[in-house]
Every structure is written in C-alpha cells, then in structure tokens.
Image 1 (cartoon, rainbow over the protein chains, first blue to last red):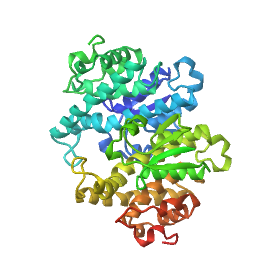
Image 2 (cartoon, rainbow over the protein chains, first blue to last red):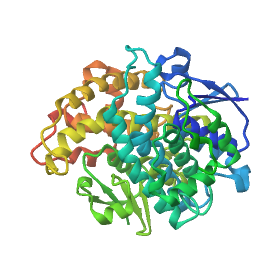
Image 3 (tube, rainbow over the protein chains, first blue to last red):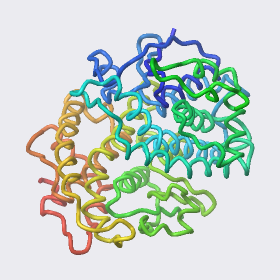
Image 4 (cartoon, chains in turn green, cyan):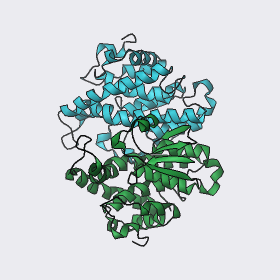
Length: 230
Length: 230
C-alpha cells in the first residue's frame, strides 16, 4: 500500500489526503516532523518538506504539485467522472493556475505563516527555531486571508467550483489550505457568504471527514471547525 | 505569434524564453514591470507576476510551471529528441521535483531576493516599495546559493544533466535562475567545478544567447557573464 509522509496540520499534506480519498486510493499515513530533519526522510525528499508519497515502496514522489501530476498521469485516465483534472487543454491551464495559487501563493501569504508560528514552533527546540509565535507574521496572515477569501467568492460566484463547473484539484487545494486556517480560528467567514457556502459543500464530502478528526494536543479547534453547518 | 510578457531579469521569464527557444517556437517579447500592476496585465494573470504566455491571442498561460506543462502537452509529443520532459513516469517525477526545486525553492532562497533587492527596487517608487537594497536579504541569498551550487554539482556528478542523462526543463530552470545571480556577480563559481562546467555547457547553447545580451541600464554585468569560457 502507498505511504503518505505527512503532518496532520500541513496544508499540502491535507491536499494530497483529499486527492487520494477522492480518487478512491487507499494509503497509510506516517507522521513526519520535518524540523527534525530525519535522515531517511531527506533521502526521500532532499527538500525536507511534507508531503511525500511513497508508492509501492520503490518510488518517492515529493511535493503536492508533483504528486497531483503523477496521480493524474497514472490513475487519472481510469477515474472517469472522479478525475480531478479536466481533459481539455484550456481547462487544465486554469486548474494548474489555481493549484499554484493555493499551494504557493496562499501558502506563502497565509497558511505557512499560521502553521509555522502557531503549531510547528510549539514542537521545535530553540535550536530548531522554536519558541513563541511571531505575532507580526500572524497578523500578516490574518490580513492576507481576507483578499483570498474574496477571490474564492468571486471565482465560485462565476462558476460552480473554483476552476470551473466541476470539482478539481483547485477546490481541494483551496479547501485544504483554508482548513488549516479554520482549525486555528483564523478564517473571517462572515466576510464572504459565497466562499463560506462553497467551503461548507467541500467540507461535507466524505474525503474531508478524516481531516476534521485530526487534533493537535493541547490546541483543540473551535467548535465550528468540524460542524458541517457552521 | 505567441507573446511572452516578461522582465529581462525575471528568472521565471528567462526559463520560459529558454524553453521556447529549445522547442523552436517563435515568440515576441513584451516587457512587463509587474510593480506597476497594470490593469490589462492583471486580467491576464491575477497573481500579477511574470511570465505570462499569450498564445494565439485567445489563451493566457501564467507562471513558469503552468507554461512548462502546457507546452509539454501541446507541442511536447512532436518534439521528439528536443522534448524537454521524458516520457517515462519516474523520470517525469524527477524532472518535476527539480523544476519545483529551482522555480520555487531556489527562487525564494536566492534569485527572488537578489532580483528584488538589486534590480526591481531601483525602478519602484517609494509607494511601490522601492528604495535602497536590504543588505541582510542579499547576504542571505549569497549564503543560500552556496548549498544550491553544491547540490547542482552533486546531481550533475551522478548523471550527465540535472535530472538525468538528457537536457530537460530542470536544467533550463536551474540555469535560468543561476543566470540572474551570475548577472549580479553573486555566484561563487570557484566553490564547485562540476556545477561550473555544467553551467558553461548550458550557457553555450544557442537558446541562451539572447539572455546574455540583455542588460539593465546603469547596471552592466561582470565581464565573465557573457563569456562562454568563463
């Protein structure tokens, strides 16, 4: 069975968990604390980041974007209606543009800041860069998330899903990154009803259920986090 | 003809120029100063970043990674020996891993810092974020580039090119990002002979020539920059 090296609150790992579940692929989760820079993990991914998908024990596929392309090439064509990438060239450009938007831009501007400051630093030693959260980074993330939420509302207001009429990688990436901010109580849902309704739809999918059960010791999510009618 | 919105010293734009030239595709260059946030450009790419490839006037493909996938899907199969992505699944994983390494990791840790601080800020108004370069960012880039250079030497020492035996997107991305640091005199070539020889090989390809002719007004490159036997 495939193994996914992940962290419960790593947004890129969450994206891949959603993708695997939506594709009806079974996998085993192994938690990786990337700040420990475990030697065997660095051999799988020299960049030292989660997620890494180790398929059949022979192949390590590192990184959310690389895993998405790998799965679309290897199992996409047999998934039919479940396929998370459209077949049309222009539609593929749009999915990839938005996949990059959430996995890189939203990550840098929002989810990486929140997870690093609020979660990872709790577990890191002083030498590893741990310590109290940098409040200016958290404030920046809380400010940045507002325009991303408006952008999601704008996109979904024009079409049924983030990148078009059907559910694609773009929806799962957007929802995965938002879910981490939501766990930390940092999504101002009241500011965009359209984005909120879209998230409620994605969140109620069976693929999302395992993510809603994850908890970080000593840091429970707000009550609305796992509430499907939040 | 396709139009590439670019900046002469934007490493992602340079990567796409190399890809287009290696694929024997003709294109027209339009310089974009992203910090001006031109409205018509933001319609092409809401992320507001270069490069954007506007193909046939109908389709805008934004971002180095998205353009690379788009071109591999549309023209890759007819390029035969010139194709910049392998056909084999495992080899494609390795090319994409390293493409991401240079376009995202090297960019964040090295080339973005250098270009932003040393070039873009010269043209930006105070309101746009212009001003004197932040020397701590430049020092960080100069420190980070050393381990990237060793990693390139390690990879090329094991195989002929960055991601395998043949020239791929990974070589062009690595060389594009390095070329910007080289323009600014910030590559410690003496620290890795293997990396240096690989770069000399890539730099002497005809696709590289236009990049070596670009200059920024008032900021000429060092003499070794365009020297093929540097």
